[in-house]
Length: 87
Image 1 (spheres, helix red, strand yellow):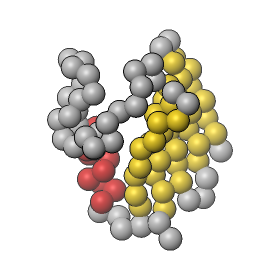
Image 2: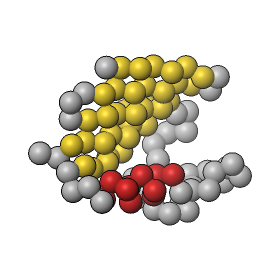
Image 3: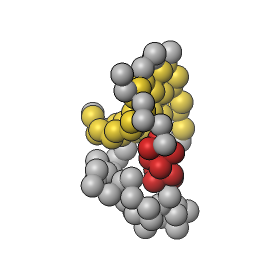
Image 4: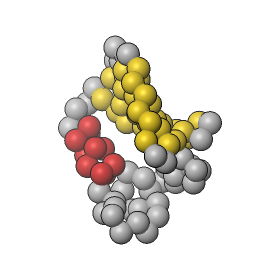
């Protein structure tokens, strides 16, 4: 199943299959630093509307489930966050 959401500044694509969920959002700013994106309070920008906790919380929750993992990739100006079921 695939869902595409358009918004003023870009779009979000969500793809779901049996073993993974991929959430991709468009980006004009390039790739995030994969060494820091899942760390608490790290923000790619100094946006006052962001507290830098979201991805850290997601990773902490997924670490409680040994059969799930999360990864990040930057492909064709899209930031992909993929949650996979580990076999």
